[in-house]
Picture 1 (cartoon, rainbow, N blue to C red):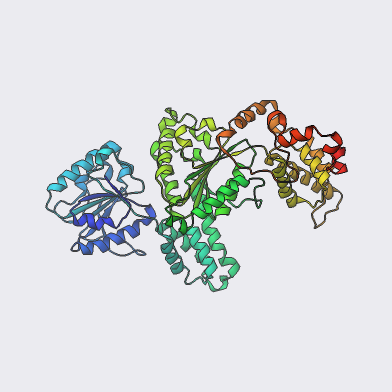
Picture 2 (cartoon, helix red, strand yellow):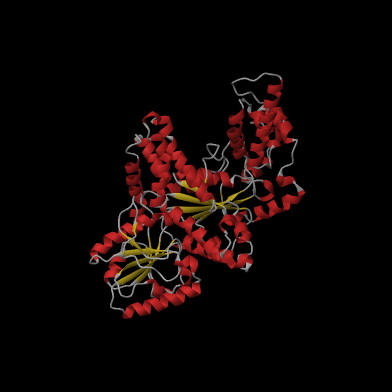
Length: 562
């Protein structure tokens, strides 16, 4: 079987006497599917369109358009002898009457083995039939055995394009007096949903604002937020989450990663296609815990102008292999439909623990194989970002799928200086001298950005509690001193210095040469001199022979005291 992505190919197959197809479509898109078959029936000499599923015990004649009752109970409706569970596919078709027969939900009711037998029997019987009949097996998620590939084409009813979503939104918002900006935000919120779902959620979200007394810009601006919240709750049930923007403007000291993001941003432009260039398909952020990997992924979406979609791998695993694969396929289909996207997996190596075994009934291996295939073959502007702590836990075939691998280690002095500034600006006013900065950076040497941020936050909490007790709250941010920050540093031990974690961190650092550093060259005034053999470069070696007074003559007096 060749999987056809275009639903419109059905009419060509029907004219070529292909009598049976499978159609994958969302349940809420049923009215649109039936409406299209009504149009096609006119091209096929007015063949009647019939529909049934396990909720009916008779064929329903499809008569009218979307927005009204689709079925008519007329004399042409023929009773079925039993439900779908006990019916052969051959019995579902009126052998003495031509028509288009749409059966919904058969793949959910019958086992794969039963599907294989019934479809094969129906196919060969219909090849001998002289009656013009077309059978459509409609379902939300279709998986076929290999033996059915040649005889059962599978069509997919596509999600609407951005232009089609815009048309739906414009039509729905005609009576709600929404601004153009509001409509654009609503379009962006609706992208990635099926047509029928967009219709229903728009109807519910806009209804409160269609009354004259409720027409208010502040209220109508909430329509997009209502739809986005609905969308997030729906996706969260499948292990998908749309992350908010990061709470800091940039990740300090990651010039190496920034250079990669700039390349990606330019490769996403139309001009790149003129040179046959495409953006990378996957970026791996690897390093010690707390070094800013997850934050970097969030900021990357802002940097390149992409939607950030986070996925919890464990939430993809359902009760059955079928459900798990359906969740992953839904995720892939969703990110493929919403434009430029970053698909984010945090602590990704945990997803591959025991994936080659029969753990969880072999579902981990099947999910991993499906993801590997997608990473290799997809052409949509979707870039997968994954963070890991332990590179050795990823299988080799997964590692080679990443176009860029960046390593996050302990921050350099210049990067640590930037980290302090990013977090201090949120909570305090401050004015440190160069000497105070050097003392502070020396005290926090070996701390990760996460540890620095949390230490500053604890100092802010303490200052807030003290001001509340003394009733000295001020609308301005308070001043912070170096002594307060150093005192807080003495209250905790960095992870890199803890006995139970230092060996793990050392193991991660020892493999850093396999990746490009996420940090750039430290060019700040706090940078240490580059060292080579015996801890000194050629310049330092020359200076070693000079008098001691000449070596330190250029340093400020206060630095000499340190």
